Length: 243
Image (tube, rainbow, N blue to C red):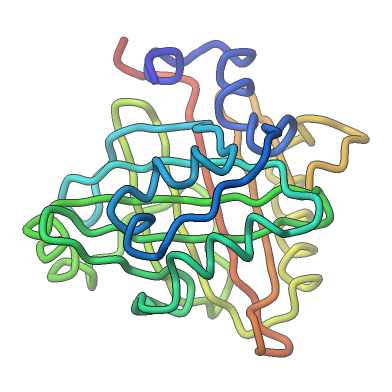
């Protein structure tokens, strides 16, 4: 979105990137068949009341992609169940963190999770053409530098970045309890000068601000895996960005 691409305005950035965590949309959900949902994943999410909080082009291992973050008001996890039922049964797991939906014209990586007790469902979509998807897979061994610490011993499910807008995104898997991972980031980020962006607000994620950047860290337990975690990191630079 243009407000994000131009960068530098904390209010505009917070209103877009963190809309999915702090606000939320309401309305009756619409249940689609799996085939209809897979044909238009973003449209399916919007029909359920999803709001696009952020969308921008990114690069994954040198290949073009589009990153979209959608938030849904979902206090009873009904929409999360509908999304998983419609989209995930036939998907192939990648790094045990992302699912992949393949269609003739594009490939969609899909991450669905519910951070903390915030009553929200978050969906991250990363879409590529089949050719770009193959290119990013071939370059997967080339780990990119990331502006936040990657949890020790974790494995990277996906890294993406947009250098023009200063956005970096990563998903990780760790053999550690969510509480242990959260404590590691809370201590490390504060020691590095990061401060809570919304003190006293339980948003279901750890949101931090530093002089020229902001970030969020979301840690969730892996389904059926005691003592293992999914980690989602997003970092946004607020300086040296193209207009």
